[in-house]
Length: 155
Image (cartoon, rainbow, N blue to C red):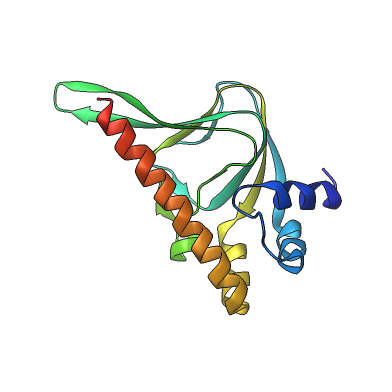
């Protein structure tokens, strides 16, 4: 994807939508294209979270492995598609964080990958931008918590 295509994807994503054009243009160079095949993991539960991912094409399941004594299994937390975001810990906390779920592509998928440390650096250098992104990270976490509670209700 070229820079203009990346800017278009960012502008139309749930996470970056309505962010000032100037900010979108600053985020675009941080983005790397990454492709996944069906069944391939974007990240696994227990990995360290260092990136924010934006789904350009495809579908990703967020699942959590469960261990309840003699019962073990996996539960689906959420299904994410085009324009949705996953990962955030390094940008939010400033350090790698152990991921609490596995993200697996359900079909061939194209994602934009943003290094959380680079995004965090931008956030600290521009407080207004940082506040906007932090607010969006809070909404992202709220969505995940609600999805996790929904998954618990289905157990």
